[in-house]
Length: 100
Image 1: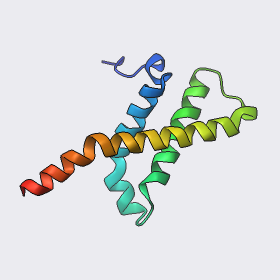
Image 2 (image 1 turned 90 degrees about the vertical axis):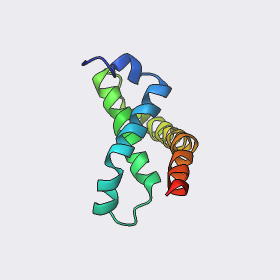
Image 3 (image 1 turned 60 degrees about the vertical axis):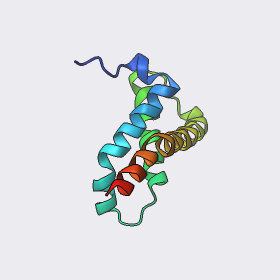
C-alpha cells in the first residue's frame, strides 16, 4: 500500500496536480475555518510550492538559483489544479445542490 504515490509519479506534472488537488480537498474545510476569507487559490499555491520543493529535496535536485522557476511552476500547477477542480468537482457539487 505504500506505493500508491511514488516519487516517480510525483515527478510528473499530472502527479503533482493530482496530489495538490487531493491535499487541497482534504484540508479545505479546516483551512476555511482557520483562515477565514483566504482565497483558495493562495492555499493551492502554497501546497503547490511545498510539493515542488519537497519533491526537489527528496530527489536531490533542489537549487536556490532556480527558485524563480520553482515559483513560476507552482503558479502553473496552481492554475491547472484549480482548473481541474472546476472541471471535475464543480459539476458534481452543483448537481448535488440541485437534487436537494
